[in-house]
Length: 410
Image 1 (cartoon, rainbow, N blue to C red):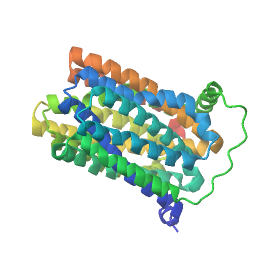
Image 2 (tube, rainbow, N blue to C red; image 1 turned 180 degrees about the vertical axis):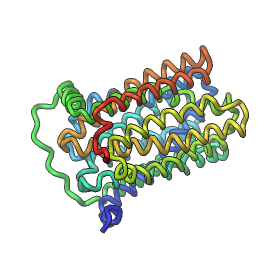
Image 3 (cartoon, rainbow, N blue to C red; image 1 turned 135 degrees about the vertical axis):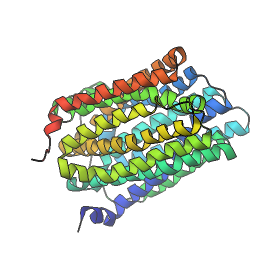
């Protein structure tokens, strides 16, 4: 029996997969809907969009610093269900506020921050939970399947967000996401595999948990470069989360439907990346595959600031970046996640995942805030060009690390 068929036959993995499929689709509606509402309904400025992006990313720093040990000392499935329910309730407040004509940037800021916090805790627990359901030999295939689901959501979610925004308005489109999180919680609640009893630990102390996670990630010479790359991608990726939608709407002059279809093109690329990742690892080795795919992914981002202020031609540039970049980023991310789950003990996975989230959150906030100010000063196009150069330099560090040799084929 092949690894893929073995995974398909695992009913509890299928429930986890189904849960993520449902929530991933709805999450894309919210991811695009909040900034769309801010720009087109509330007339947000570049600085306000930067703050919205920062508040979406900021919880990764706080939760990453506080929650790693908590996840490792807890039943992870219960945390996943709880965070789905919390996100559903939080998002339901947005259409209610819009219906009452009370929606404001303050409300969107609070929603972005609180939903972001719940999402980060969900992701930390999810990363640590997967090895409970899947054998080590099948982790790369399992992560590839989950990433494929994210890719399908990337195809359908943003396109649907653009259309729903035109039909219903962004705040009401977000209501669909609240429902998807409840469905996801139902699938997760149906998993029957019992988790191992969390190891007895010393009295919880978040500072010690942070040090433990950072030490474990840094001490493993093949994981440490991934942490460095995570920081670089978060810092300069914050530029894109802050300015991409504004750049596409105001500079390239796409409407919301075309923007949704443009982002959906990235889902096609991401789906290809999920398919390629395990095959590339078997062909070239995990380490070389991560190095090459991440450098090429960063380089492909230059298509974005090079897009001309022409609706059709500019959309072509953006679609090229979405398809090529997402394919390569997903390839790198699938293999990097599997590498961490393979090389590090399960008992520390929550703290290591929290370390990665904290690094991404802290530097992502810096990137979003800096880019919001810089975009208003020198312009969105020039700011995104700086971000592209920074991402390329960050990924190049992997080529000079022990990672490039890991699993290399002769």
